[in-house]
Structure formats: structure tokens, C-alpha cells
Length: 343
Length: 291
Image (cartoon, rainbow over all chains, first blue to last red):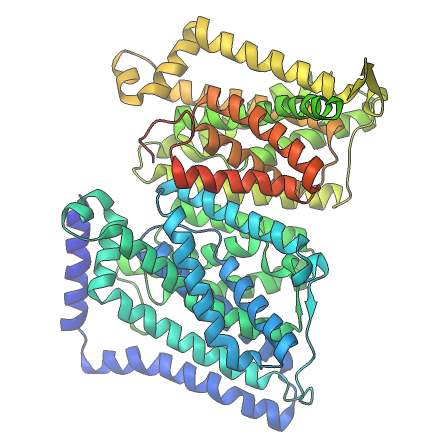
């Protein structure tokens, strides 16, 4: 059963390489590139007109969650180890860059990559402990990680406790203030998505997918499953840490109640599963839809309580009826528009 | 010395309630391999139910167990039938249930927050504020009653599992689902029933907690963290394990609370979870096989 699925995956991959015709390829490559070009040019209108702050803000939310969901995909989607605690990387990145800035005035833009490496290091360390377990026990340990970290940050004087840390606003006029963050996140997002593509098509990625199908068989086949899982977990923390550093400086305040809630960790998972876990385009599609839905619920119904009800109901519905997510389900039915087939 | 024994008393009193909270979750996992992360949300739901009948009909929260237990039993049966019954044979079932129940917890939280708002609540029967003095020691009356009832319920659950035919069928299903089916146990029916019983325990816990702690809709996150630690420490699916780890951690947390400060007592739970994962991932009383 398990090998069959791996084989089918390989076959679809081969087909995807063989089949595309020329016109198809134009749409396949052109639409994502056009969207990307549009996103890259959007701040120009902001500079000229200065009326796009709201849209830039929403798009940055999308970039941020795409970074988190795509990164999560490496361990949760490819290797099948569902982590509900990936926002811990986010918090680590934010607090590291924030505290460094307050102490030494080194800009978070500069320290963000270091924050990413720190998050990755922490991921490797945590993976060493938690990845000794499988399945449900692993998921539980990741929830416990969020709760433990929140508890520590809530009570630690160095991180400002529940009040958190305040950072100064960026030294730019309101009209331009968002633009550096916007581009930073956009670039990180593109790198991150491209990275998941290369991971998926590497030998490493194939091994991860084998682990998610049947870990024991993968191990018998000679894959060093333990090391691979831990490395995958570390990699999945890298860009979330970077994004955390940037986002913390953008928000100008760091609080455990923003970075370390269980619901944040869940929405990362939800976005990926909704879009299609294990696919490259899935996290992007899922994130865009979920942020639109959330924004709609908050704006139209005006209650954050209903927001988590909607989040929960969508998650249950997708898990029960479309466990492959939007991209995965469409692909299985051969209905996926070619411009969303990034695998 | 008096101090040390006093803390032990308070720790054991809380341990009883924790044991009641975790017994339902561990039963559900043991029989169906469902990691019910909505368990604490159901407890909070039951606590709100107890609060509601206390406020409107002035029904004593202990007495309200007569309402909350059957109510949660029914909720459990309907929930199991709707969501899980048809999917029990899925090989990825256990992982799937974690996310589904967690999402269910969020839905319950949101609905409760919408109806009751986020204000901290608790029921206030006359015994909620008084303590009993025994020699140099004291125990809050509410915690004493909660402890007694919890122990009674757990003992009756144990007797039920040990000495009735249905109880034996449940234990057989816990040990080996397929073999139980072969010898003629209606596994589907037993699963539904166990889910109902598990949630009835959550209902009882909700009634008792409503006067021992204050609660609010988002409280279930903190409680599920605690219950998870108890269940994993004891070994997923082991009732004895849940019982032992409840008393163990409750007393440990009480001492930590006294010597290091209140902030550290939840940390005790999470740290013990990671320690047990490091040295004995299957838990104190767990079997080596995991989902």
C-alpha cells in the first residue's frame, strides 16, 4: 500500500514533466510570475498615492503566514509529523532580534538571518527530544512546547513578562513605513517557497515523504530516519525565525499573548492542511483563503470569538472531507489549474 | 514539618480532581486511540452548564452532576457517532483525531465566549469559601468534597470495568481491538459507550471544578496542557498511570508552588512531560507500542 503511493507520486511527477505543452507552460509559469510582479510593484502605488496601507498590511499578513505554513510543510507535510508548536520559532526570532536591538541597536533587518539560525538550532535541539516519539505523542509534545514557552516568557523579567518588550517605530513617514518590511517579507517568502520546492524534489525530500508513508519501511530501506526528521524540523524553523524578527520590529511590541498562543500554532497547520499539505502551492492558497475568511468574519460579524469558531469548523470540515486539501484534492481529480501546479 | 504535611494535603486534594479530569481522556484514548484534546473544553462546557443551572435554578454544583453527567454522556455519543465512528479503521486515525478534537475544543471555546463572554466565572455554594480544620492542618471544604466525589467516581469506574460484562468488554477492546472483535465484542458499540462514559467523567469534573477553580472559555487550553502531561506521564491509555501521575504531579506542583512561586507550578507539568519523553517515551505505565 505504502510503496504504491510512493510510486504513484513518482509517476505523477514524471507525467508532469512529460505532459506540459507550450501554451500550458506559459500559463503555468506566467500567472505566478505576473502575480509576483504585481506584488513587487504594489508599493510604488503606495509611494505615489499613499492609500494602500491597509492592503499592504493584509498582504504582509499573507506573506508572514505563507512563510510559516510553507516552512511547517517541510516537517508536517513532507514528513507527516504534525507540529502545533511552530509559532515558538516565530517568538524566538522576534524576541532575539528585539532584545538584541534594544541592547545594541543592531537593526532586526540585519539580525533576522541570525534569528533564523537561532530558531533552527532550537528546532534541532527540540527535535532531538520530541522526535523520539511518533504520532499523537509528538503532537502533544509540540503543544506542551508552546504552553511551556508561553509560561516562561510570561514570567521572565528579561523578556518583560506579560507586558513584553516595546520597540521604537521605524524612522520613516507613515506613508513609507511599511515598505521595507513588505519587501523583506516578500523576498523571504519567495525564497522559502522555492526552498520547499527544491527540498521536495531532492533525495532528502523523497526520504521525508517515505517517512510519512511508512516510517518503519523507510528505515528498513536504509534511510537514516531519525537524523532526517531532526534536520527537517530544524529547517522548518529557519525562515519562521527570520519572519519573527521582522514581524516583531514591524509590530513594535513583543508579547507572549501575540506570539505564543496555541491558536497561532494551529492556524499555521490549518492554512497548510486547507491548501494541501505536502504540496508547494498548498500553503500559499490556504493562507490566502484563510486570511480573507478571517478578515471577512471580523469585519462583517465583528466578533473574534466567532473567528475561532469559524477556524475550528473549517479545520474539522477539511480534515473529515478533504484531508488532501484544496490543491491536493483538485490534483487527484485532475482539475488543478496549471498555474497552481507548482510541484 | 507541619508546613510540609499541609502542602501534601492540599496537593493530594487537587490530585483527586486531576485524576478525574485525566481518567476520561485516558479511557477514550485506551479504547479508541482517540487523543481527545477537546476533553478539557468539554470539562469547561460542563462547568458552564453547572454554572448556568446554579445561577438560574439555584441547583447546588455537586447536585448538578445529575444533569451534567448524562448531558455530557449524550454529547459524547452524538459526537463520536457523527465524527469518528465511520473513520475508526483509518490507519492515520490517531493523528487525525488530535487535530479534529483540538479544532472541536476551539469551536466550544468560541461558542462559550460568545454566549457567556470572557468573564471569569465560578459557582459559589456556601462551602466554596470555608475550610475545615483538623488539628494544626486545614483543607478547603470545596476541595475536600471534590476529592471525595472524584475518588468515589474513579473507584466506581474501576469496579464497573472490573466486574461487569460491559466493563470487561471495554477492557478487552483496550487490550486488543481485533481480538475483542473476534471473540464477539461489538467494538463499535463499546467504543461509542466508552466515549460517552469518558465525557460523563468530564461532565462530573466540570461540575466539581466549577466551585474549586474559576474558569473562562479559554481556560481549556491551560487545562488540556495539564491533562496531556498527566496522561503522557502515566502512559497513554493507562487508567492506573493517569491516577498515579495525577497525585504525583499535583503534590509536586504544590511543593514547587510553595518553594519557588506560583509561576513555576504549571512549568512543573510541562517539564515533567519533556523529561518523561526523554527517558521513557511510553510513560510510566504505558506499553511500548504507540500510534
